[in-house]
Image 1 (cartoon, helix red, strand yellow):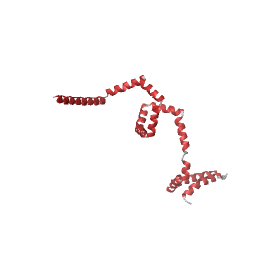
Image 2 (cartoon, helix red, strand yellow):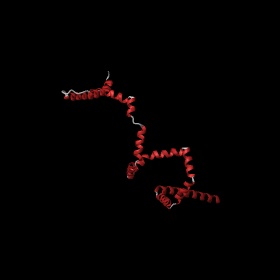
Image 3 (cartoon, rainbow, N blue to C red):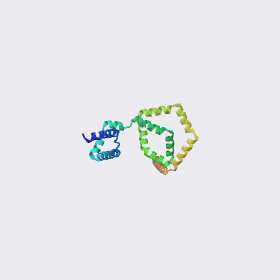
Image 4 (cartoon, rainbow, N blue to C red):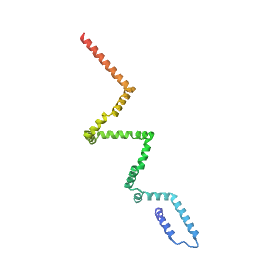
Length: 195
């Protein structure tokens, strides 16, 4: 009998031994036997053979099936936890912290960008978006939104910020200088042609 079998039989032996009637004259002996048995089990488990036996038991298919949680139970628990009123309050409070919201947004930025790029390259998604934008209700809502005072104020603010941007000014100056040179060159060419 190897150590693995001994470890498997040990709990049964302890249970059966504890079920036997104690000798009325030797109550302390029962306690001593328990302590000795406990010490022996602990000593066995600490040995290399004991550790190896535990690893074999834990990696057996039967034990894995018992240890692995039911996936549906996990899914249901997560769903209940995330969709409960307490969870909603928790997420509202957590995302009201600007530092936390900013770090989450930064961490998800590349994944979100990649997702949008993938979706834009997906013919089904593009066709669906075209269909959505063709719906009269959506077109009316978009038109109303574009005509709204809030949108116009937002657009004006964006344009003002863009014009005030040093990068935009430099690019605009570069374009104007290029256009002025082209105009000057074309006028010089016309003057030479007239002579």
